[in-house]
Image (cartoon, rainbow, N blue to C red):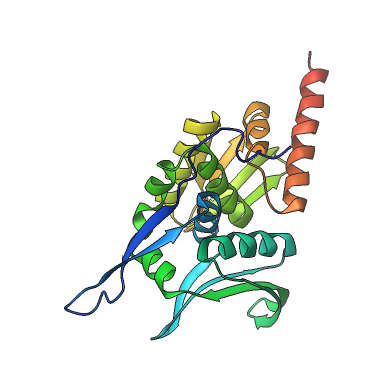
Length: 237
């Protein structure tokens, strides 16, 4: 029941990105990196706006990284990142200790200086770039964010997308309404830095299924939520 990518025919011409290869030096060099798969790029960018990160662990090593408990999420990110970078990207088991206790899951980590620099240099323009790529790319971008930060709430019959970046949530809200007729509200907990975008109503939730999750457990919870709301609404007639 998830969004069928490509149901709207759009141009899939290669997308070229420009970045400064030596931004800290006096003589700056502009380089171009061509991405063949726009939809994979959109998904990767969505994840980077959520659970993923772009980190320079040393002065000469630049990494794109995701750590997650969900293997299907890690696989989806690895496949998309592989298409973007045109290099093999692997999913590896991960075990580490955190302040909350031991963590067991999966990690996707790949070094790529060009993509890292482009993302950092255009980080504030990402949603505008996605908006220019069309509905299919927007859907994949939103799916990446939802996989990272989305949570179907059975007890209150809603879908929430959490993030500390209020501007990002506002951009997501606009994209949802513009392309999928999904209306939502942005709410905040008192004394908390994290806000969330709240999606309620059977039509809005059903429309979000068109975007869907790569994480099967979240997709199943969303579909069950829509079915329950539909049965409840029938019972009120």
